[in-house]
Length: 337
Image 1 (cartoon, helix red, strand yellow):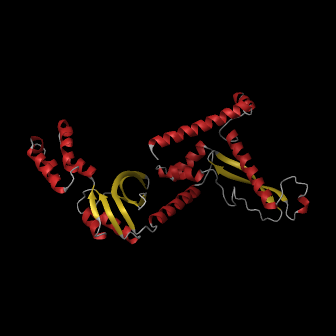
Image 2: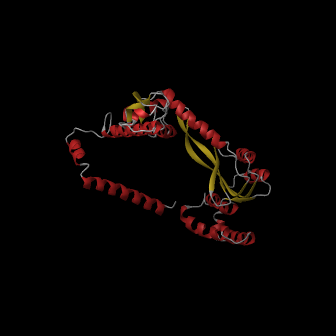
Image 3: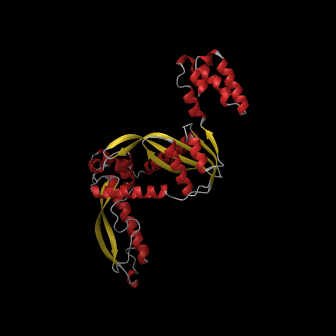
């Protein structure tokens, strides 16, 4: 999705939300609510706030509808006596949501066969709270920090053991994703590393995230794997290539990578028939590393004739011509690279 498409989608969403609010205001349904909010009789957020009460009412209404479908009749139906099973009151249950704890009345049936899907048995969290915990954990917060943050911001008290279980479940899913089988052939594969901040125990450190991206026959990019390592090296990349081969990648047509020493050899050892294409961007950065600031634009323009050449002979001739110029003679490192 392009930037323009995202902007159009965002504008469309805002327009629909604005039209929905305007329709409610025009109907007069919000007039009494607005007056109660202005008078301070109704609060929107926090414990027993309007948002919490709406979630409670919505969940309980959905649970009653589920029970009615399970029993075969709605509450108050005069023919309820004709059915073998019937309603049997409710039981209290506290669930944690993204806006705080909500007390629910879970309806029961006399035969004990009703299993709600909206709030499953044993579930103590709803409303994307797990996603919030995972997001906070990924951002570098400790289990203790998350516990304090949820209690102080939305009033939800979740034990450290529960938070640890949630994050452990995500880690198990990540491991399963990292070990999943891959397709046997990818026309193009990109191998590169980026430096990211990674939580290591109680500290957040800079580490290299090695990423393999494969392009399938339909032109769709797939992240084949991510490996965290302190530094980037050809020996480590050789292990990555071997792992990809073990997970099913039998052949690759073109592998794009940087000019790291020993990297192309590691790729060719795994997929002998592949073509290794070193990244032009990395090459340009290395060539421009020691160029004086005042000469950068001129050198960059001159190098275009080299890396945009139609074939190797033309590129070599363009490089020799650049090396013979005063600009090339004053930048021998650029010529060498």
